[in-house]
Amino acid sequence: MEFHVNHPVLFIIAGLLIAVVLGQSVYFLIKAMKRSKAIGMDQAKIRKTILSAAVFTVAPAVAIVISVITLSKKLGLPLPWLRLSVVGSMSYETVAANNALSAMGQSLGSGDPLTAQQYVNVLLVMTVSIMLGIWLVPVIGKKLQKGMRSLGNRDAKWAETFSNSLFIGMIAAF
Image 1 (tube, rainbow, N blue to C red):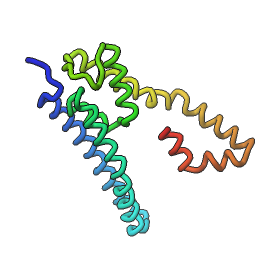
Image 2 (cartoon, helix red, strand yellow):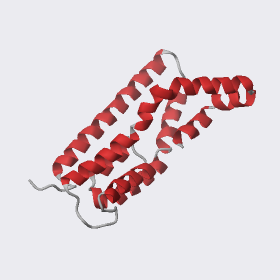
Image 3 (tube, helix red, strand yellow):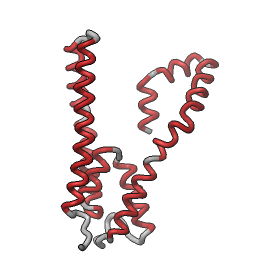
Image 4 (tube, rainbow, N blue to C red):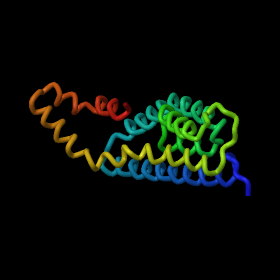
């Protein structure tokens, strides 16, 4: 069987994985809504929060679609669709894929088709590299929190900054 980056089997695998992630999201949304009712939260405020979260996902989704289109020329549609739907970001995925391809003498812009081995190499580079963040949390998380608390105890402004979820969100996004 000849390998092709847009083989139907790759679409099925990517579709199944994305369906599982979407299923989990719906499951936890329903559980959270039931729990919010059980503890007496204002349901109008909950609906407003859900609506605003949905609206604010549209702008990043446009960038993600552009990234999928950019990467799909070389990597086919299933891999970028899966990566950018579940865990990836445009800046990371593009750089990781291009670095892996350049190590094999190719680039995202070249028209040369990928072999199965090259495709797997790109997939592994994109996957293993992004997992560094997942591995670092248990290794340095406690030490980082201790350092933040220590700094906060010495300077009240830092303590206030660290307790601001917007600040933490910006640092996480960076």
